[in-house]
Image 1 (spheres, rainbow, N blue to C red):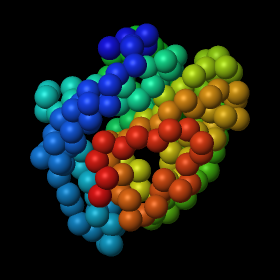
Image 2 (image 1 turned 90 degrees about the vertical axis):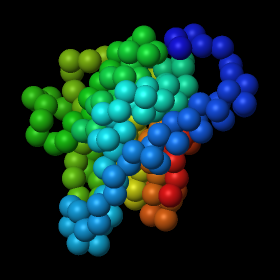
Image 3 (image 1 turned 180 degrees about the vertical axis):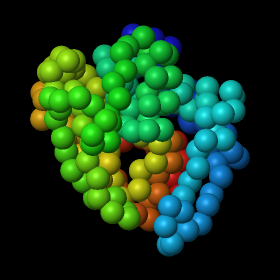
Length: 190
């Protein structure tokens, strides 16, 4: 796949998505009461550690925005996804970091998690982001705060989020409703 990929048929897209979804469903490890009581954690580490599972996920995510000129992965598992997708598309990759991990100046956006609050940051002056077409990636969409905050960060610096994608969407938490006008793809929705 390249960033100049041809438009694909619905059948090809469905086959690729089904293949990736099968790998995610087979390999995801679920843990109750982690990181705190009442939260059910989806550990995608086994998916990423499996060469076939990882390749299927990367191919599926890369197809979400073949015309993006920058891939952004959200801290921390989004870094793995972002690097793989950027290499597939032939673009650069930018890590969207948790607060305090980048030297100043930075652009910051605070947001709420399903079990607390946090902030995300992107570089303030070392990477030209204005006018960039960004594919935004994260591993899980839960309440939607993380992905929404990352998209707001890019909009605030003049970049356009052309699509966002996640491996797993926890639909019962309604995080999709907090997202912007960009297309949002999830490989598996529970």
